[in-house]
Length: 419
Ligand code: HAM
Image (cartoon, rainbow, N blue to C red; front, top):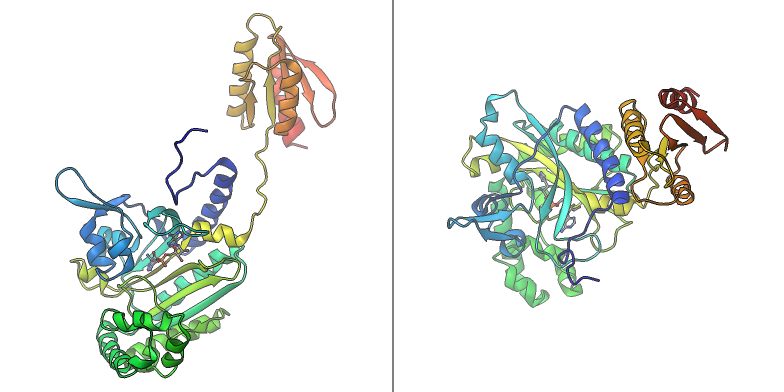
């Protein structure tokens, strides 16, 4: 084997996997398209500053997971670790605030994070995502959660759970963080060293600690959900009521933290118990301050992204119907002059007539060609010994007819399509 391999944490998508991904893409297009979301694609890399400002300087993503490089002209660029900041950049750049609001967009793209690879966690991975920019009302949050739920259901993700929370606005969150930090400082003897070290950087992370003593201490900690300002609380109540009406079950999780700094108000994550440690299959939230932070007009926004590999992993391998092969065109090695041209023409004509057709390309003997056609599941094999007289073998019935070249395609169309 060659010593050249796909880089650690990356993978090749081979045809059987590609077929599954195509089905997933079709489902996303159907579900999101029906709700008025238009497809968007942004560049694979952006100015590093976009992610530093958008995702947040203090996040793990910006601090240790970005693939950044010099573009050769002294500017730092970064392979996109996520899609929300680039889409907000595009919204501003193309003046989309002048369009009817909200602007609803969806994407299926690859993203890059320098994480330690493990099952369900890669360095290049794919996400389906949706963003609704320019609408502040709770209906938009609920619509997006329902769409993500519908997609996960359509893909067949098993053991789904929805965790839901609200972060309030930046102002309330700041006040809450101070209150939480004060609580943590007052209870340092009940916390691990790691947590103590992070109190002033990110006190919320204390809720994630594995250490038993810390967990016990955190039981008495103040919760963000109890500190929401009245209008944030009302917004959150409406989101919950709409989800209840839609029959979507959720669990309130006041300690839910996501690794991106742009969130405000509603926040959610779907997990699947069919996944191991990397159980988050998709998540999102509201990011009302992000566009302004990137230099645009004050604009609300909300959205989500779901990992393609995690969706497929937790759905299990679902058999994808093999490609139908209507016709295999065989050329016996002993065939006369003009046979290979006739074979080439027949395969092309068959494809243009809407059939799926394959031509012998490997120089096999006739027996080998028939075996190969059988392996492909071909319905008919045309054997071109003499270009003027073609033997058409019906692989299901087993019989064989001699036909003039122009009769081959009509015969197949009658036999295989208008059955
Ligand atoms: P995120 O939670 O960082 O959110 O990523 C969304 C999903 O991408 C995760 O739930 C997971 O399924 C998948 N994912 C993340 N990292 C990896 C990885 N290293 N390998 C495989 N899959 C991964 C965002 O990216 C936000 N932009 C979502 C959003 C959109 N919020 C608002 N709008």
